[in-house]
Image 1 (cartoon, each protein chain N blue to C red):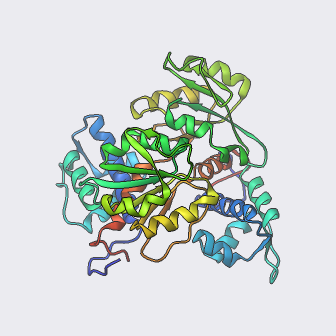
Image 2: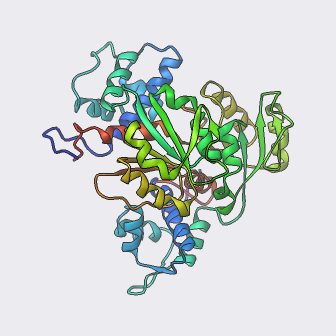
Image 3: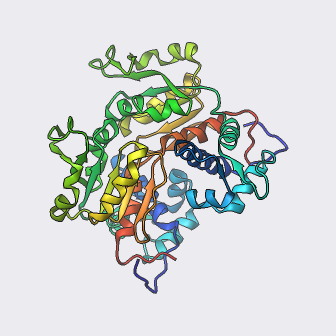
Amino acid sequence: MQESTRKVPKPTPERLATYLAALNDLIEREVHTIASRDIEKLTGINAAQFRKDLSYFGEFGRPGIGYDVQGLRDTIARILKVKEEQPVVLVGAGNLGTALLRYPGLMLQNFRIVAVFDNNYNKIGRRIADLEIQDIANLAEANKTHRARIGIITVPAPAAQDVANRLIDSGISAILNFAPTSLKVPSGVVVRNVDFVKELAVLAFHLSEESALS
Amino acid sequence: MQESTRKVPKPTPERLATYLAALNDLIEREVHTIASRDIEKLTGINAAQFRKDLSYFGEFGRPGIGYDVQGLRDTIARILKVKEEQPVVLVGAGNLGTALLRYPGLMLQNFRIVAVFDNNYNKIGRRIADLEIQDIANLAEANKTHRARIGIITVPAPAAQDVANRLIDSGISAILNFAPTSLKVPSGVVVRNVDFVKELAVLAFHLSEESALS
């Protein structure tokens, strides 16, 4: 990651993505203007933090008037680099991979899955949502054309590290990992993990009558 | 949530769920003993924080010897109330709902989806993974039998709030929401959101050569 004089704290991008999701939701509901306290209600992130996060990138909103929802959405999308289409490759054409390929929310936010790979000869050559499932062995070659830098892993846990290595060798430097295992990656490669079961475990804890959160 | 003298900080359950996922992974890899610094390597959560999180629930591990992986896993599973089977209902029998119904990781961690609902008459009566898709109108009645307290929402965003209301009316007090919208719920109901697109947006930000994280 390149050094710059403008330092953005590490949790800021995640909060920006949360604001973006809330703004997309407001656009769906045809809300045109909001105050920072509305952002707090929608996201649980306090209004002062919201204004601070934006302050790293310039001045937005007008006192007493608030923020133009579409304008703020576009600005945050530009900051997060999701204003232009981002090509994404996906490895693992199982149920979850298929669900993601058909998930309308990805395209709406400018993420386009451009290629899908598997190592199962029963799947290779079949189509999901207009894409032909390719042999994982073709990944590096195929990505010379696609030039994707984001990869999604939806393979079983034991296969995930090998897939991550192949993705990195093919030019991927950002990985969304759905396999319930921790990936080892070289510095410069970013991994985000999505773990449903972990989320369920947190919910189960909250169900407990013994638990008391401070 | 019941008050108790033993206060657990709010982020602790989430970290416990992260430790649990790492320990499950270690069990898969047949690792039997670990030190708290290994937990740090696996989860990115520092060793002192790990020991502190455990300290709310008693004494574990032995100095110089470390932690028994299986024992620690079972202890954390008990704390998180995932040691006994947790029944879960799912609403939304689309691609994502189907993927979750077939996801082996849920059963492995004692979450059993006991019923699945949809409002689409083309889907009601069909089966996924041994469960018959039921009419959403039957939810409250069906949950008198199942007595699930956790619900998963995998419907499109515009339908999610209505589904959340129905879940809550049926006795659900913990919701895992995959719809990209914020849910309004009464106090005492916990919601966790899984938003793939948000995760991708964070990854996209990290790809940016202009970004510099402090």
